Image (cartoon, rainbow, N blue to C red; front, side, top):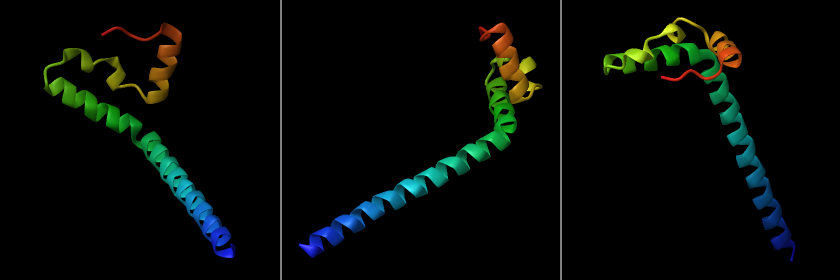
Length: 80
């Protein structure tokens, strides 16, 4: 009986540890995306421009993420 209780406690502990690890990875990923979001957007826009999409190279390339979101709040979502 005691062995079952110990195994159940260890299994619960392992699940909590996995959840903590996943939370740490998620926070790290969001932090990295927040830091590099402008650069990533510019790289994707540049790739889209190379493939022939003239609409990708617009005023949004030169603006920061914060400026783009403020403009979207003010004007709404642009139609491409």
